[in-house]
Every structure is written in structure tokens, then in C-alpha cells.
Length: 347
Image (cartoon, rainbow, N blue to C red; front, side, top):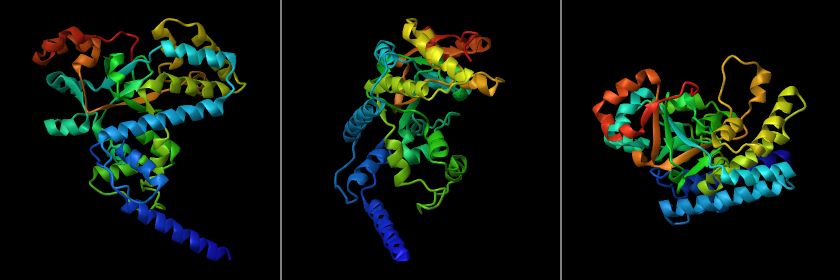
């Protein structure tokens, strides 16, 4: 009987896989299309015979984000007085939106007057050092996105030494997830994301069998789709992340410091100090306990459509020792008012 049940389950799994594969394949040109397609397939594996265009994908994202916020609200209830205070306070503390860029790419960005998605870069014949991983394009259509961190006051230094600060208005129509696609694949899905990326970079296709540990398929996209947060929910999502960090802080000295930092957020009215406390800058050569005490309360990776022009930028900060060089470039002159030296305490 056990073997018969196993055979039936195997047959059912094969049938579902066939139906999923035969359903409409979304345009890979559109950010979020693979995720919307996964959610569509999850409710019925048969073909819907309807195009997943940009408008429909945007509407799905709004629905998905609203549902996720409702789930957080349900599962976190009831909130403590301090948790509710943070949720309320963050509505008046717009999260910093910052792009980090490799210095060697800055001149090309100034020349074009914009940050561009991988697809736009390809059209322009550009090959910048911050090129998006092919694995993330397979996961959710990342080649159609421009990226920026949402929360860290100075962005994520690992993406470059140039800080590009973006106006809050840039969030209109944007979406985010709590981590990158690469991080999701290895830390959440437990896959060898680097090996998968190397395969794609070498021009190879990923395995299609769901049982292959290097495959990327329906289950991965469906899982990732539940992390989608549209811009109107960004601060709320960050607050919910913070509440979870607080609730999971243990009784160690590091946990005590986390609770102290949470309390400081409730009374801090300076925007930069608030977000520096919310997401402390990474420090090298510190102990495990010190790192635990500095655990970020939250983070979002913002995803924006195709291009962000210099009109969306409030400042471009470069290493102080390179400021004179940047100001001498012909490409800088039209954007000179944005250029300044990075402060000494900004990594």
C-alpha cells in the first residue's frame, strides 16, 4: 500500500509539473512577471490565456503586498504598547532610499544622466560593474530593475563606494523584498546560488527537474512572491520586521542591547539618528556578541522600473580624495550641483 501511495503521489507531482510548464510563460522583460505567473499557476495550473502586462503585474503586486501586511497584522496581534508606538512613529519617518555605485561606473552614469536597468544598459552598449546576477533575472525578472536599499542611511557599501541619495518621491510605483534574490536562494531556499549563477554566466541553463538542487522553478518563485512589498507598505513592513527582531531577542547582553535600541527608536526624532539606530552600519573585527547586539531591525531592497534619472537624485557623494577628479570630468558639469564629498563617517 505504501508503494502504491508513493506511485500515485509521484504521478500527481509529474502532472502538476507538466501543467505548470505548459501554462503561459510571462515576458521576461517585465520585473515581477515570473512571480505573478507563479501565483497565477498556484490558483489554477491551466492556461489563463491572458497577457501578464505591466499594469496587471503592478495590480497583482498591490494585492500581494496588502495580503502580506494583513497576515503580519494577524500573526503579530496583539501588539504591545511599545510595538504599536513604533508602528505609528515609522509612518512619519520616511526610510532613506540609497543606491551604491562602484566608482568606475560613475562616469558612465553621469554621461547618461541616469541609473539604468541591465536591459537599458545593454541597449546603450554599457557594461557596468554592478550588473545584476542572471540568477535574479530567472527568479523575478531583475534585468528590468534599478536597485536601491530602503532603510540604511548610507545604503549598502558592498555595492560600491559612491553614495547616490534618492528623493522619497522615487518610490512611486516601486516594490521591494527584505533581501536580494541571491540571498533568498542560498539562505532561505538552501541552494548553491553562487554555483547556479556561475552556470548561467557561462551560458548554461539551470536543471529543470524540481528534485535537482540547482534548479530554479515554481516553488522558488511562489515562495519569493510572498515577500513582495509595494512602496505604500515599506515603512509598515520595516516596523513588522523590527517587532520580530525584538520578540526574538534572547536574555543575553546582546538581547538586552537590542531591547534598549528599540526603546531609543520610540523617542528619537532626528531622522538620520533614527535610521542609524534602526540599521547600524556594519563594523569589521567585532565579536559575535557585538554583532548580535547590532542586528538590524529591518531592511528592504527596493526595485524600480528601468531607469532613475538625475532628477530623482538629491546627492551624489564620492570619496573625498576623488572629488577633484570627478568635478573635472566633462560629464559632471550638467550635474555639478549634486556632487559632493562623502563624509568621513560614511563607509
